[in-house]
Length: 180
Image: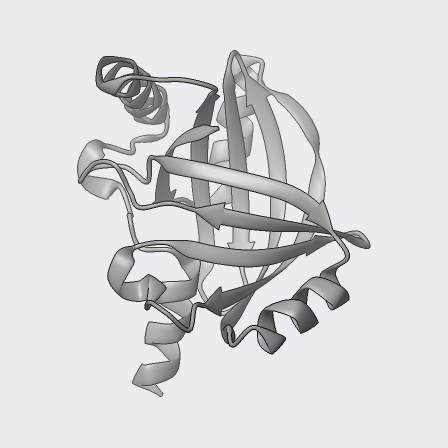
């Protein structure tokens, strides 16, 4: 699965009003606890990859995110599978993987046409909007079309391409910890 995604800082109150006016459908609220891991054979910070266990409402998913495919968005391959979070954590640690950090957030999810809009309130960081389109297969031209569509959508909220944040929440949390 390919995830074409753009993230930016955004105050949720105004965004929710505009989403409602546009006819976006609210699909629910999730509380995420994401535990990230680093590999013993390569540093994911250097290779721009991610491996995490996301726990939501008693359900855990192991996610691998490949390298970002462009310099503008967070477009990348994403592979997921449901797991037993505790056992998977134990397996990864036994194999020499190490925990990189934990990100906690509350996510409000909306659907609009073929886009998923996530309003994230990240513990210690603030409020963000993520807009994504998932594609089973996409060539470079398709990715560009989807990315332009996302940025066109974000213009409704006064968010331009220059506002795009490619830094992951984990990187932001770790940077914040370094500043203390």
